[in-house]
Image (tube, rainbow, N blue to C red):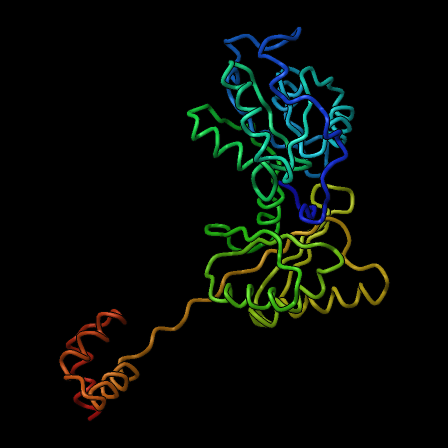
Length: 320
């Protein structure tokens, strides 16, 4: 998974005529893992660095060198990463992106069924999370094949940790819709979400998105804009949505703007105050005036609001 706006990227430039992944039988090449290798006969979802190459795990290095097949979102980026890691990819490299992942899933899983190891990597971060990988996992489950992971960097979790906002409960919402109307409706539907929310956004839309969030969630809602995570110019801006809008507008006016790969973290909606017994009594009396029996109205309202029926009944009688 990556904070890079993946929805904005086109398919990689790998040749559409490349042979299917199944042309490499498990163990057919020199250096292939034997049947006792921990990932033999499995799909491995392997996390890659989101910015700093030093975050690559030793296990990722080993998997790239030993796997029978490496399915990459962008094969060029994979080879560039391997070069920076000083690793020679030992198996077959095949493209696996949003435009071919459904068609290619069974080709990859045939390798797994034959005892081979297939490593799935995205351009940055954890596959499947806002990146290709879901369909091969779902199909593997259908076929009863093993899926495991080589965990590592995650833009979602890194931004959440740096935000200074509650982390005990959170939700990842992915990319914000690009069209203004759809974006406004989508954010309005999230206005009452009590959990901390994590979003991805593109640099050229971040200012308008922050404005839309301030309108939907309220100017005072706490938030953080985290950009270029783990990179040289990493930055986390924290404050209310109104403050973040002002900062984004000021930078845009200076010609700099908020650049790079961006995560926006927004605090959840504050808990609503429970209505008092007096307010509930007014609701009861309104229902009685509409023809409902007092005891039935009290029982229903008390159950819904979680207050004692006796207290609500007494308050309703006192208010008549």
